Image (cartoon, rainbow over all chains, first blue to last red; front, side):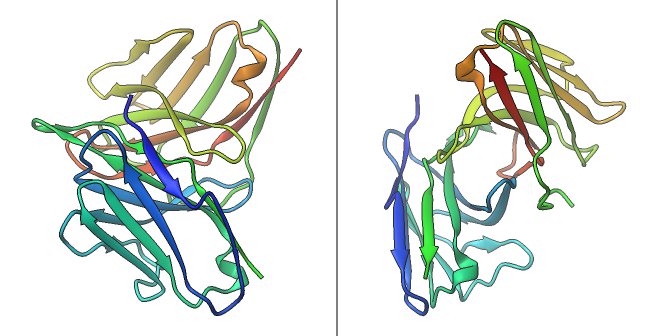
Amino acid sequence: GAVVSQHPSRVICKSGTSVKIECRSLDFQATTMFWYRQFPKQSLMLMATSNEGSKATYEQGVEKDKFLINHASLTLSTLTVTSAHPEDSSFYICSAREKRGATYNEQFFGPGTRLTVL
Amino acid sequence: GENVGLHLPTLSVQEGDNSIINCAYSNSASDYFIWYKQESGKGPQFIIDIRSNMDKRQGQRVTVLLNKTVKHLSLQIAATQPGDSAVYFCAEGWANNNDMRFGAGTRLTVKP
């Protein structure tokens, strides 16, 4: 099956620093990638949708200048949390979707990145 | 809203019993639904999907039922095993569109 990887799996950083998380589709081309945030014991909350070569579309309430998303190729999207603060500590999960013909395939999820901001 | 932060409801079953996990979706226009399984510290894993032109679909040990009249989705797991212990999410959206939205999730605990 399709595989999506994320790097790093865990990161601890100091408040005020920036952290970059990579999401890669390993065996398929992802025309669209999604970034989710998940707080403990809660559901996944969609942060933004990114299409290769174009600007990401952010969900309401998600600051685009704080969560920078780059989808430079069909296999790589990055999320940069800028000037991270403790309230940004969360589990960040990416997913990728491959377009097949006229319909979209299901999303394949990465393993997630645990961000802890001290 | 569809991404409301809620504490997860829980379901506890005995090993070997059947499990039924329910989900109320929000948008009557949604035409594509997926059930995901998420184990602790991992990303969601696809289990089964269903289109709105169906009301039932079966997989290996799992069955998804869709009731569009009341916007209700259920996941049935037959002969539940300890390895089925996880959080289960339903997601709704459109087959020809990127966007899928997640429900609140249910934590399934299987007792040996």
